Image (cartoon, rainbow, N blue to C red; front, side, top):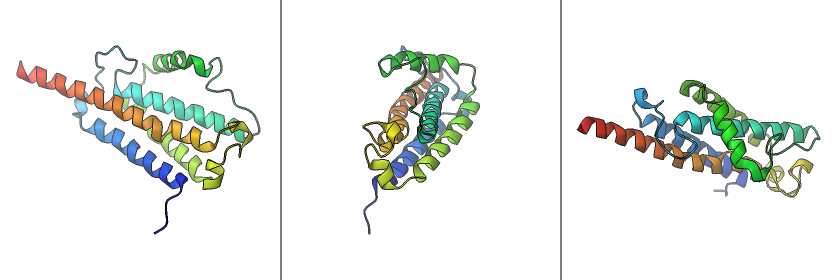
Length: 177
């Protein structure tokens, strides 16, 4: 049996974690999945987490498209620097408050597949070699792909677990009354 490449591991971990997000969602009764929990944190619902992931997928797709066209993409987004990431994430949160959970699910599933397709387009060497593409500067494609898939999904799983727990415990409190 041959060892898996970093690309194969990234694809596998991304898919496993992506599926885990939906398992958490499905652990909550369907009528309760759109509940917004009370928290001081930015993300208060499954929709918030899913749209956050979706928007970061969209930014990655823009960086990738512009970079592969020979441009140097503005990262993370026009008008923002990496040092102002909290402001960017707050703006993302605010811009998707009118989206339904069902819309968020559809958007996220489609963007996940598009990003997985981008990863599949490349060889392991292209993904892992630093400076292989001019637009990645001193980094490699892997760092961009992993940050916006597998690693980001790990963060999202923790958020969704907290949301699910809060909703389910809220349900228990109501039943006990």
